[in-house]
Length: 464
Length: 66
Image (tube, rainbow over all chains, first blue to last red; front, side):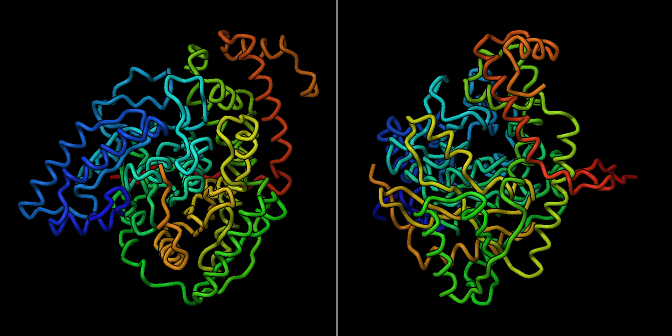
């Protein structure tokens, strides 16, 4: 084994299962890497090497006894710091919760612990998954490992940074208007917003009850499928959880290729509704060319204008977020960072009728969008409209933060996977989204895997 | 009243009515900006196509348990 930092979950699992790699040595290598480089990147808000070594020793003993639990057994992972890990603070990167301690694990934490994962720590986020990147909080914002002067996306910023930097092969984030897919896109990794209700949100600090999703970030599509297979499943304690068995087998369909699959391109999102940067648009067209070359049928489709989806998303998001935060906003407004305070207060005076109308529009938009899948197998569109901007330029961050085509799929609720499509001339990552009808995650991974093998972007890593 | 006519004193009064009494002038400026953006967004919601029978998504359902 040459460089443990770049092992995928799937590669590590093979080595660990075959006892060719020690979980303890693997954990120690990644701990040393975090200690050496994270001072420059701020991916971890709370780094827990002592827990990682305990988990790794336990995994090593179990595997030695022949009790291999599955692909995450002995593999390091980390959690966005809005996800509970019993006994540790869940700060949401905020002064408001700086001294809190989680009493129980989140549902997703329970599942990753049961799978034998090695917990490396809690990751930076935009404050309460909405306000960032901020420089007025108790912890600094995460930075882009491809160029630390640039924005790494958010709100699951540490998850994108840690995965791309080789600190962990898998990290868990949350996504309300694109917060898994934004850092995935900006950091050159894969990140999915699964179907609403597929992964339990229990133990995850809410931003917007009806738009929040939990999803994994990884360096490959295969790893993402492996993680989602572990995370998905009904949870009767999450009122939004879908009472169906886990889709399972996402990883099992990866090698089926794309020949004959019908791909609909929502080009108007990034050409006319909102004009993407030329390098972003060109990278998507090149990816579509590759998919066509692999045997997919590519055709253009259209849906409601991007602006209508964004208006519905923002109306619902700000209303629900304000409701969740109203007590703190009354009692401790000074304890929020400026960005979170302003973005959350946007919901203070939304009229009830506007909120209800947005939720009514949501049903119509979702029904109309999912009807398109009678003629296509999946859709492709942009993720971010621009390459990552500088992190120290608040106007550029504010401008590019809103220039995205991710929020429509928080509105429709179906799965959306952001995958890397190469690099800008400045060496910064670019990406696109694969979008499906509800519970079609396996198909998205199948296409992502075929493209990834043809394009080879995932073999490039940032030099830290 | 047009949104651009909102003043700091008006937003202070509106904030107080909903219990936001601890906001500083800087916070109130933020609230004013955020409110103006939110109100502008209202105009972009495509409500013209809605009819009264269009139900909201995620309507509450009772569980059918014994």
